[in-house]
Length: 388
Image 1 (tube, rainbow, N blue to C red):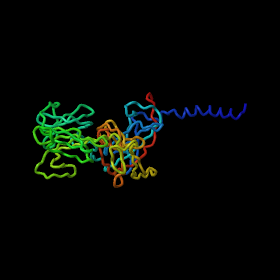
Image 2 (cartoon, helix red, strand yellow; image 1 turned 90 degrees about the horizontal axis):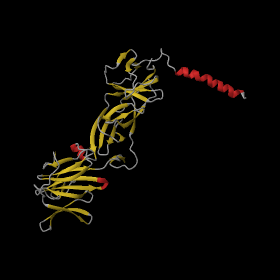
Image 3 (spheres, one colour; image 1 turned 90 degrees about the vertical axis):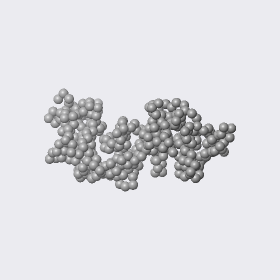
Image 4 (cartoon, rainbow, N blue to C red; image 1 turned 45 degrees about the vertical axis):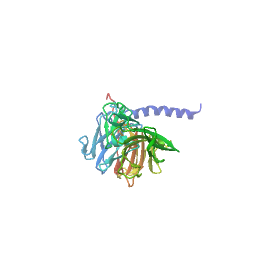
């Protein structure tokens, strides 16, 4: 038998017990929960997010501390935080080696809500509409608004405001007779007299959503239109006759001598994204960028850590920006079932825009001073077995 392989085998067998002894945790070196974690924070005032990682590098717990928190003790070497030895679900973690590192998020980091996009029903009325149908009450026109939950019924007041109805509409009297005709590819809303002859017409520009449904008011010279356009756009408008106004068309607010009293637009936006620097309702099959890299505040104890790549995630409910390790750093929203995110840089350093959508609406937030974040390392430690 060749002696070389035999020697190698013997060496391997001798290493096995040695490795097993290294993995064993000497009682005098292991910490029983709660574990004291000492760290020197960067020179930055703000919220502290401290991540606890197992030997495989998996994040098992995030400890969060507000400025001046009583949960942080001040020591000559910095701060002392305590960990109860449990993960995010409250389950006791196994014995072994753990490490701690985290970030200070500056107090001047801000998240500011800017706008809702592609769903005026949500933006104006806080109704998560998915589809709209016209309705008639005995004394008013209105809409049945489909949502992911129960439908919402609403009357449209003469001043353009919505009144949520307590019950579905009962059929009311019809107003003047109106119908929608096609005139060489252009939709025309026509009022019909008693003998069936057209009395007056309302033309909608070809590049505008085209009428598909019309109801006339029983109490005033007004009509309610449901219109559709490219990309699944659905628009509802209440137009009132204004005889004193000269016929004109301007910014879609006045058509002939009709005044737009109420207007809401809805557009499918499950595939929203950024195209050519602009937010679009349908960006195709290419997913939007949901992460963004910014510079970090310098930390002399971690000179190699100069940048951070934020990623937007759903927190169910809500949303947040997290570090590459998964540490939740900045809460964006506390509610909502967000399914898709897009991050885009802003005009200045540390500024950005985040767009988040749930398939019904896209919400926009402005992020300020994202570069006011600093990283730190709290080292590693041994966690004692539960029975020890």
